[in-house]
Length: 447
Ligand code: GDP
Ligand code: MG
Image (tube, rainbow, N blue to C red):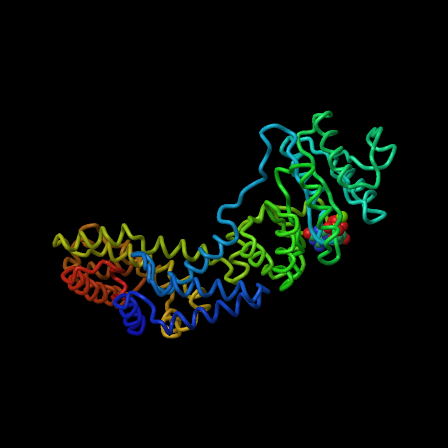
């Protein structure tokens, strides 16, 4: 391909790890991305420190180049903090499963009660909603409306609803407790307790919420937080973690212009998994939370995971080892091997995009800019037009064979000649590498 690309890859290959300056520049970039995403400053500091440490310790896997390795570390760390593999709701072995919702006023608890009811009903459960928010005058009515839409009955401290007889009024703790009892007696296998929010951190309401928790012994206490809360996420999450405690987080209003930083802040500070994401006012605007997607969103790296997967495929460690063994055994590097590597190179085209996001990679980026994926197609066509014998032994390819191959591949004899020259160069280099014993990225230097 180009000399520049050759030397850059050689450089990275021999260097094997990024310089400290490269890593610092990358870490700076990550810090900026996190702050832009509204991740709390303290969380950003801790996170970038960890990434820097891991990047410097150079756990460079055989298959990846160092730049990608850093991206992978960042991504892995984000996913780990965000909860690793997403988990679903913990259901009680002896129903009813009790789910309590907690969070600031307006966070989206009541809406979530309906969304959860729909979600659970779809899975064959029979949820009962309990209106334990007696703070706002219309809170109970709101939950009834939501329950009706979700097709789930609501247990509420008002006469005439769902056949309550002796419904305690005024005391949310008593309502919650009675709600769970009602679910048990009416064979609802899940109870969702909607509680009163608070505008700010309010000691009295916090006490009430922890009393409800105490009285109902929930299997899940879900802390609902507005994703748009930004930097305040840490304070709010800490207050609820200390004041009530919770087993999982639901991130709401992710459909707004929320940049997702709250997710990382809350998960990082409380160590609790995020179970669901709420993405709109409709009851169906609700989905499981995917840590990997959020990680990508936070870093605004789009499909970084896909890129990494592609790169892993392109430079599959096994393939590299197979090649190294083959060459070490004195076997020749053939045109077929050359083709396989060119095909790997095609995947590298998508690396352009990723490298564009990494600082300190200017040289490599420039080199990749000049990489043309159609070139791989042309080479592939030429190699495919050769007979197996020709591929094994290119020396067979005389003038008339050249003309035939050019015609068969829709190219020119000049192009065929150029390919054979490049291949000869690659073959020579592979021999040298085999003698040097290096696995790495065979063939890259030939391009
Ligand atoms: P609560 O005070 O915690 O019970 O919050 P509500 O469930 O009453 O929600 C407060 C407001 O936010 C309502 O207007 C909801 O329609 C709205 N809301 C709740 N969840 C979402 C969401 O995921 N996206 C959007 N855009 N709005 C939401
Ligand atoms: Mg509410």
